[in-house]
Length: 423
Image 1: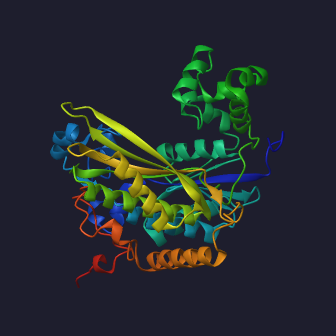
Image 2: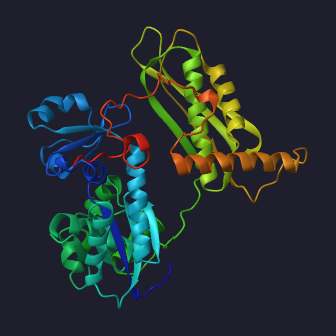
Image 3: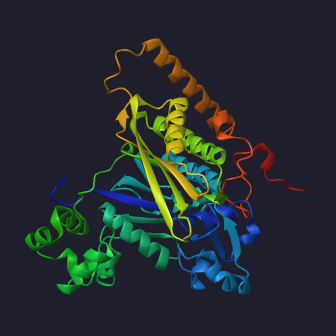
């Protein structure tokens, strides 16, 4: 814990409102005010909803077909997920925040923490919100508090009760915590919440004033940090740079049942290439690879998942090497006649590319050439669009890819899909 005294600064959580639905509206303003539902990669489940769709009672994670009649009756706009567009707009929002605040921690695709001194003019927070909306078309809510947990609570309150989209927790903190169920606190799950309820701790205010020794005994040091955060004592550090991931997974369900080995090899090569990009983005190398496939058992409707574990000759992020071992693993798993529904890759034992013991038998110049090649490919793809350059093993047609039949155009990343305005 960083201190036992309240902070002399504010945490501000900026959270994009109904982010995926908002992204769809940026280039299609006819959707403003209409219910929107965003579907998963294979158009199977609901992964995001606009405020209007939530009011209709459409739940998160539900199969699309179960609510098809309800959505048709209320003219709900269905969208396939367009993560390329969402990611690009997220990048624009975060860069805008960084221009207005030097200390920004990106927490997720649609959330970021900022730090301001306590002397900061609170009216400026409204200016931040207006600037993000003007520059990106995305509406954000701002929650202000002395800790990250309080900023999160303030943000939730701003979304529900503050018409101006900004809410500051100060002398009103206990009043807000009194009306907040303990299960709604950031970091308190349903299981822990049920345990607290059984001991008479029903609200966030109850937890704030709970006995430290009791909290540490029943909720461990993690729970005690949450209690101190509710009291205005910062215990969750501010990280300007996210920690490198210890494992990376790339997988997708297929758009149709796949039975042929060539189609599976194309898919696994594509996933290996994407996993390699993710490893290089954080300046890392991977040591182990798990390849898995999900298939339907013969004579049954049940699906089973099989894994093949591979240890690489040395830590690497070289895509051709990852593709080679991924295809080798998949070939060992493949059985003719089975119906395959999904495949994927998990990279683990990830190490820093500058802090590992290389193989003494690998020529340094050979490794440098591989790094330069991967850097060139990543740079071109970043500047000219995802997968402008790709490996032949990934295939061309990719008939196995997910459906996404209702995907919006890639307005910001493809020249041929730029928005056209007719005058």
